[in-house]
Amino acid sequence: MAKTVIEVEGMTCGHCKSSVEGALHNLEGISTAEVSLEDNNVTVEYNDTVIDRGKMTEAIENQGYDVK
Ligand SMILES: [Cu+2]
Image (cartoon, rainbow, N blue to C red; front, side, top):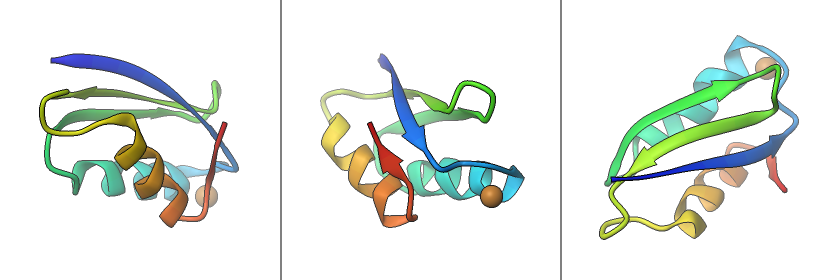
């Protein structure tokens, strides 16, 4: 299991938090996704033989947020 922190711009409220967490949970290979609105990031635990950061970034951007 791998862990990464992705910096995300534009998340402001609980709706944003659940959009980003939900989009990540929908991907295969994600075990946990936890948004911090204070820190403007999401901490993800994932199976790095199944998914890479590029796919996560794409899923977040598809929700309308920018990944740094
Ligand atoms: Cu919001």
